[in-house]
Image (tube, rainbow, N blue to C red):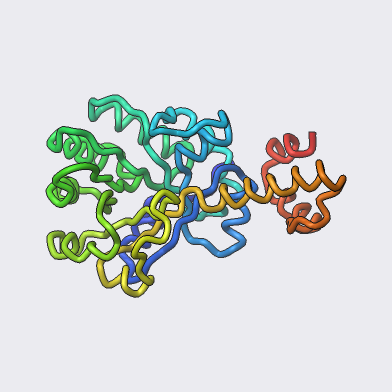
Length: 267
């Protein structure tokens, strides 16, 4: 059962006067934990799916069908919290991007991160097509490479709900805010650029940032904990010294997940 996540809920967060942090989730259990922690939006990244399904880096090549399939499993665990997802692989034609967005909407995705292309005009036309033909999904347009401000301006003018600039440090976002007054900004705090000149939430909000992504933080923490447990079992015959989720908490967590998912956990 897919929960009632809507683009309107996500757009309300983008219109607020404060920053919302959206951590990465990758399965129903992690989604449930994020909701229990109090998060108001979560992110399903192609890189997380590639890592958990294939044990390989995503490299921006995770098929949209795989993202939609995984998203469909998360709905019940999210309890209405908006889910954002990457649109890593799509055809160039605006109509094909619309088809993907509608599939995302059916899977319970509230907003998508639309990848950038070399041709600014073509990328802007994709945004326009999504706004007109798939209004049930919020569009956050990524701007990569050269002419970042020009790209962000074009995508905002085409109707994007927010823009996600890459290659601009948080401390330098002021010039983007000045160029795009009133346009919500999204920041990706990926592990690749950890800790370099990061601002406080209040500072980010003053620069127009409304959403901060943490796509792999929880997954990397989970994998680190699993690595320590496996090593302890090998060396000591027990994982008692490793900090773990209490079994009672695990039991209550899995009770909230869809039957098909808990069946997989139990077997």
